[in-house]
Length: 110
Image (cartoon, helix red, strand yellow):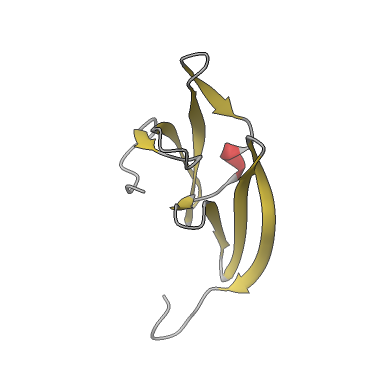
């Protein structure tokens, strides 16, 4: 995934891992730690149009993992980090795992 450079930036990404380019549109940061959100649109080859993924905006800083066909979201607030893992199931984006961790601090962290 490319890094954010501006509100409304459109990125061509294969967000549903079907080999056809889709779109992400940056909605901006959620807080001072970033936590960028995006609208996601997948290409519908039958109707020849992009279709909005209703829950894509719930994924903070989406990272596409095409080898596993997963999208990983990271939400940070202070030293608290929530990691959310999504998969496509029957054409729908589904949250399959969510866990909380602590952001590393000290010399290796911030």
